[in-house]
Image (cartoon, rainbow, N blue to C red; front, top):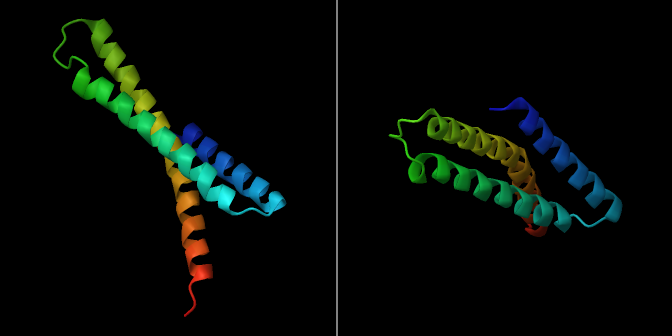
Amino acid sequence: MLKKEFIQGIITSILIVIIAYFLDEWRYVYYVCGWTGLIHLVLSIAYLLDGKILGSGKSATNEDKERNRKLMYKSKRFFSMAIPILITALICIIVAYLKTTTI
């Protein structure tokens, strides 16, 4: 994974949690983190599809190979940023579920 983007995802999650804490609205965490993480995940899949499936894998020119390599790198960047954001949203959903259920 790419460290810089992973750290950016962690910082984004922390900022969203801090804002939700001061506003005392914890549902913002899974709304904002969920949508942000899903958008990053969709962009990652889009770049992956463009680089591998829609891109010409058998091209003979270096420009096409370099373009595919750059698209794959962008896909990895978006995916590594989406992971901590989606984990934060999932944790918030689990905690909210556990608070509402009585054992």
